[in-house]
Every structure is written in C-alpha cells, then in structure tokens.
Image (cartoon, rainbow, N blue to C red; front, side, top):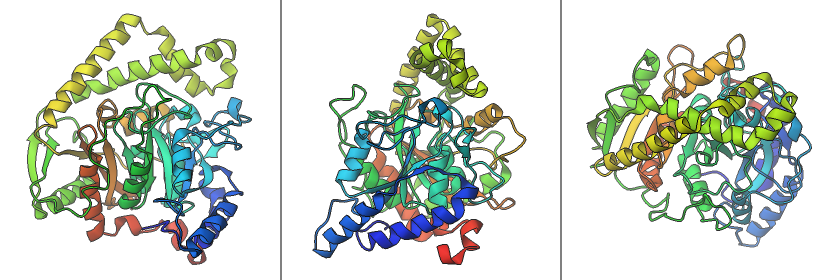
Length: 455
C-alpha cells in the first residue's frame, strides 16, 4: 500500500526528483504544485503525533488538468484556458484533500479531453514511459504516464468514452470508470454531461479501491450525482473468488485481436478458473452499435457546450479538435433522440445480463500501443476506443487491470472487467486477488530502470 501516512515528505521529494529528471522526456505534467510540499510536511507532523488526516493520509495524488484546483491553473489542455484560475476545488479534490491526499501535480491531457493520444500541441506531446516513441493513450494520458513514471502514487482522470481505461491499459496501471454519477463531476471541465465520469487510477488496485471509496460521496450540488451505493468498493477485498460468474462475449470484442494480447487474456482466464471462477458465454448485446450512438450523443453535447466559441473563436481550437466538436452542430435532433433511446434500451439489456453474471471480461484495446509519430490521431482514437465504447454507455463500472506485457513490443497489456451498477466491490475483489499473486503492477519502465537513483 502506498501513501500510508509515513515519510510523506521523503516520498514527495523522491517523486519531485523523478519529475525534474524525467518529465522533460515524458511531458506528463502541466503544472507541478510546489506548495504541496508544505502539505507533506504537515501530514508527517500529524503522523508523528499519532494522528491521521484520514483514509488517504499521505497519498501523492496527481490530477488531470480538467479538474479544478483552487488557486492553481486548470487548462483542460486548451490554449484559451491557460490563465483559468478556479476559485474553488472540484468536489472530488475537496474530498481527497479532506481525507489526507497530497495533490501535487496537474497532468497533461488531450485538448479539452477530445482524443486518445495526448499529443497536445500547447502543453507538450506526452509520451509513454515504457517506450518514449509510443503514445500514453488519452485523453487522460498524463494521468497514466505520470503513474508509470512514478511522479505520483495515484491520479484522477476522466472517462467519457475510454479516457481512463485506455491510458491505464497502455501505461500498465489500474484505472476505473466508475458507476456513472457515483463520483461527482462538479468542478470538472465537461465533454458530455451525460457521459462524463471521474476515474481513479494507481498501480495498486487496493489504492484505486480506497480512493474510489473516498470519492463516492453524493454531491447535492451536482445534478448528475447519484446516491445509490450499497456495497463499499473495499468490502469484498480478501474474499475468495470461487463461485463468481464471469462472462466472456463470443462476438465483437475479440475480433481482430492482436495475438499477443489474446495470449495474455487467455492466461488471465486460466488464472480465474484456478480460483474457482465459473466462466460463462455472453451472447451479443448489440455492442457493435455503441460507437455510432456514443459518438452522436457526445458530439451533440460537446457542440452545445462549446457552440458560442466554435462560431465566434474557431481559432481557439486545434483543427483536429474543432472538427470533432463542431460535427455535433450538424446532427439532426431526431437522430440524437434515436441514440438517447438506444442508450436507455441498451442499459436496460445490460442490467438484465448482470442479474445472472457478476463480471464481463473483455480486452481493453485490441492493438499494441501505437507510435507517437506519423499516425493520424483521429484514426488512432477510433482504433484504441473501438471496444471501449460499449462500456462507456453502460451505467456500471469498468476496470482496466494490467495482466502482463506484449511478447513482441514489451509494452503493457490489460484486461477490462465490467460489472453491474454500483458493483465496484466485485471488480476490486478480483483485481486485488490477482495482484496478490502477480507483480506486473510493480514492474518499472526502462526509463526508471536506467535511473536507479530515482527508483
């Protein structure tokens, strides 16, 4: 467990040293919050006197830079927000800080969270610490890369379509898209109000569980916040897996899957069987239609939010992001209505499936981590997100869990675990059990292995 309240200043200084030495290559940080050092000193004094600031005491936390921090810039990765200085913390930041977390950095991201590559033209082209020639995923690319480079112990990203799960997968860390509405998005710069989630990330599934639990607090000031949790995320940790029913879809998710990724997923399924997990087939639930409807909903909601700026100041957007967002201005209302109805029926069908199955297992991405140069970012986004959109439209949680490395490239491979609404505890039950028996999540990128004094 990291951030357990001891030697917080020592860990802060080690993280800061890694940031200074390596982020010129990784470019995962937009703003390092120097005054967080004082918070580390304060927490060490509390611990020295036998006290605790809460369940997150001393946890070194990075934030995607679309999450408001009082008195520090929140850019959302956009040039026109470079001077944006929030007057209050986002609700999730308030909760994390109040429970002992040390917020030490604002992290790089795709511009306005539109895209899966995080090759940001204003704040730097973020790279993957496992291979600096590869992308870190997106849109929360900095949140994944900063964790892999050990600049922080946990991070928060946001996930509208794939933006926590893809960076977690390609950087070899755990990332959660939680039950929609379970973590307030008040104070988070929006992409799509009815699709946005705040997603906890860390190398350790246990750290993600305790961070998730700390943030799953109903926010009466957020109209999209829900209050429905019945089982706490950490409640099933340590319980045996025997008897859990894990479904594997027979269609779509495994189409055109990289053979080396398929190998790792098969190994994970075999591990589940050894634990006494019951593997069952899952029939088609119209998952292939998800991309069409997700795209229509998100483009319409994004275009509505940005419509005045799109028309008055198109130069504020990069050409790529302008084209993505502006496309929503031309979608007929009848088509949006069709997609909203489809989403409701789709969710209803998935809820029926999860009455008989505890977890559905799929790959996170079907391809190896793409190169950072010489490839169209929109094409990369579609390839990386192709099998994530069905879970973006699901009401319940999906976790990206690292399960090894690609046998050819040596880059991380992860599996996606999805559960019914408010069933995060089942995901953490499996993930923590797996991490007790494996050390994939503890391995370090070559970038760190060649700098032993920074480990």
